[in-house]
Length: 274
Image 1: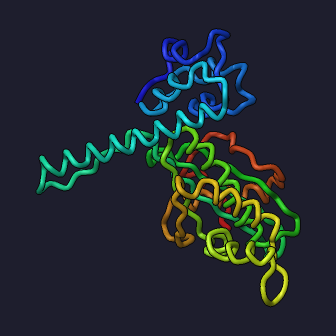
Image 2: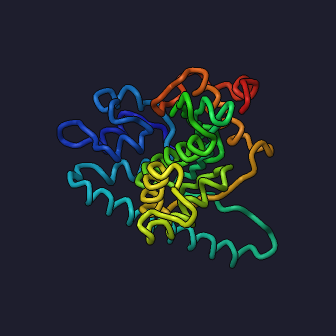
């Protein structure tokens, strides 16, 4: 891990003292933070991979060039990782060890809730970096939604976050407790698209959000692992995403925004569950 210092920032800023969009993402900042990126990033901890990429992206004006650098760097990291694992297997045959990833491991838990169903609906996301809770997101409130629309909304927002994280060089996995949502974008939509977005037996419900999620998933599925987990089965991330769905309903937040209150996991888990 690297602590963000003025020296590190100087290595990454261009001649005008500015950073680009991907560098902001690496620092864990939003585009709206660009003017204040120095004050907001000093003292933060970055993985070694993020710090290296931050410097490598200095003065790269073309977005396509920045994406190429990130893609090549990810390939190099995978090569390094495989090389290290081979060395470990050769030298230690009897001892089982875990080789830590050199670039950040990001796990995104997503959930949607509705009370009653149909009724007031909201979506939530919990983001973990290297197995530690990093961020919570909530919103997409619908006064008359369904559990499925809320779940699809949460999955779509998770894909948006995943795209940003993979562009920053991180390994990303999404864990979703809605098999319906996963099947919609990874299985059923393939056939629906071939048939002009129609299916036997009537209309495709929630088609607008399914299309958005499906097209985005196809863009990044080679870099993102999407898997199903059982709801309320002891996964902290799933429980926190669930609490964010209820928080979205309680606050009636229609946008999808980051949870800005202090993160107290025990207190959050005591909030209303979906």
